[in-house]
Length: 275
Image (cartoon, rainbow, N blue to C red):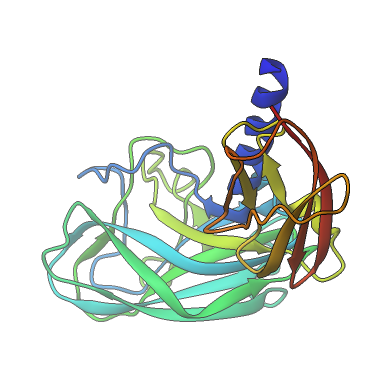
């Protein structure tokens, strides 16, 4: 029994990670005063490249929010965040071979030194299933603002910089220009979007089973539960209903029941054992 319960818990944890995923190459979220490089006064393109398979993403992925680290800034300005689908090996062919998937204006305020600025995409950006990798780019025009995009002490992939003013017409890794400790904090977060064609039974978690007091039913954020019934083996409705993701089973007699859950993507029927 214990092994089964642990297995179910692990499966649920994996599902949650797939449903809400942050793309990051930083190993922590502490912005330092040293892990950055920029061309003073603007004309900076700073970026991260994310291989989606490295994050377990194979379905459509909807980006809803993001984070930008700030090391230092001497005046408020509005940065542009672009999300591109890019071909490997990056930066070969960029930007000609890239596809702009969406953009967002983000205010970076004065006084945000050594902090992380969180923002939401006004229109979520859909990254289609089958996309191999994306580029998330933070653009500072040549506006005279002394801005250094914040970084952290550690990273697990390259940070990228381009600046025509500083003779970097094409994206180059910060390591290649002599700043291996520049670890830009540029993250985005989104949800896996499961399509109509997916098997709804594979996307729903019902646990613990066997159950004693409470049965939990978890569905993806884009799936609506329309109704539920818990029947005994004679087909009699027990009256137990799904409320806020749980069904109270403590008042039921020990035995085997049939749970039927109707969703916007189909109906799930599962045998439930009450201890």
